[in-house]
Image 1: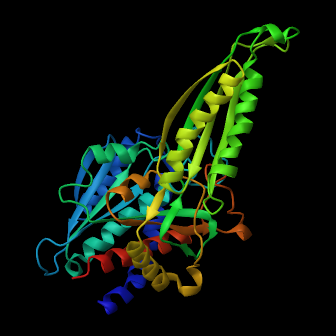
Image 2 (image 1 turned 30 degrees about the horizontal axis):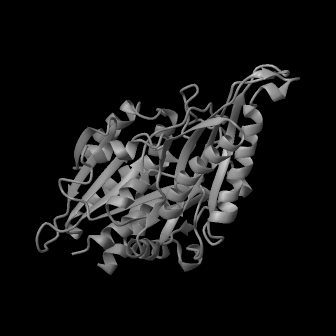
Image 3 (image 1 turned 45 degrees about the vertical axis):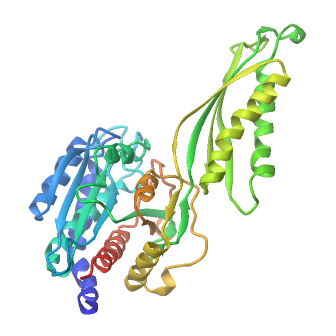
Length: 400
């Protein structure tokens, strides 16, 4: 098996040009969440040409590929799910690349075009090596990651069943990490994310006579300040967490006290216990402050997802694969947590797995715009690194 794995570098190099070509083709034809119909049709076509079974319409516009290994072994073997997200963002691209988006106001600004290409070339590579592994690979091309809805939709459509999934893998091209490096760690790597909505109701009046009104602007300000103490005084200093409010809306004239003010914010945490505490305590503190100031507050959690938590065994599997791909020096240890979120978290809750980051940034070449920026780009050498690491980990997991 070691000799087979050593040949993967050569195998990937032979496919690198096609890998880049595929990424650029998908980059030119981005589609928004749950609208990825052309993308899904092309994914299914390539999978079938490579000899995979392909099921379309999973979770709306998702595609699931299935390939069974032919190496001898006892029973049906294990099933590994490999996930790639496929949706784009509502952004106008600012690029002069020949392969820039051809759709106004829609752009692959988070690397999902590269994830699709890696998934499809992985399919071709594994089909050529199906005699070398025992078990089944599921490739889940997931819609609507940017809306934190696609993973749940695929789960509802049975992506983890028939056959039942034993473990999961996924990667994210990540420009904060330099190209040529792979970031992998056990435990939480992406935070949870919850969107919260508060509506503070007071009693409107004249700005010159505040004693006859209940000013929701002042109450909302006090609530925002009070909520900052939740992280500072109720969450362990060894547990990172965030409470931020990005939208405050209320009032319509400089000299009129409004009837109501709306607040929208985000809660982030890396442990489920901290997440649940913040979700509960935001409402309790907001209601307490409002009541003390003669106002009322409504509180809702509008949506979110848990933290992405990697299984230690699966993280070690990927770490070995990454070291074989880029060398020990390019697989840094230590805390690898990122303050973003991803609905890969739901798949990791269903089966032990690993979500890892493939360095895609290169500041010297100006490839350093943040994710979700209209200037976002990737160093395309990252595609081969991601493919090789994923291929090695997959074959290692399913070795006879």
